[in-house]
Length: 113
Image 1 (cartoon, helix red, strand yellow):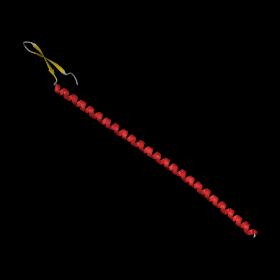
Image 2 (spheres, one colour):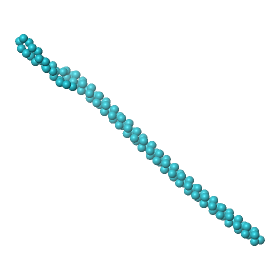
Image 3 (spheres, one colour):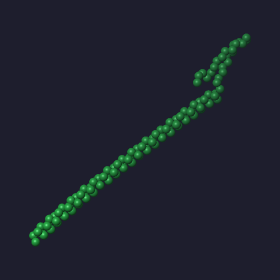
Image 4 (cartoon, helix red, strand yellow):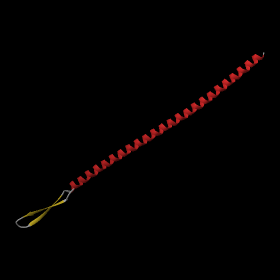
């Protein structure tokens, strides 16, 4: 900001006098207030940016968690489908075995008569 007081020397025929001019205190206070307001506004902008970034990070974490839950549900559904398919295959094989045994027994019984 510079020097607040400024000296100037003025010569008169009678004597030399030093005149001190002081910068108006109101102007200094005005400059300080403007600097403080600008700094406060900048700090507020930084805080808002930080809050927005935190919200974005939280949303990303929520999306990742939801995607992981969906993947787990898909895996569980796949496991259930595999178990159902295995059970159906076992039932089909059992039915085929029973049918073959019945056919063999019927053929043997019919050939004995």
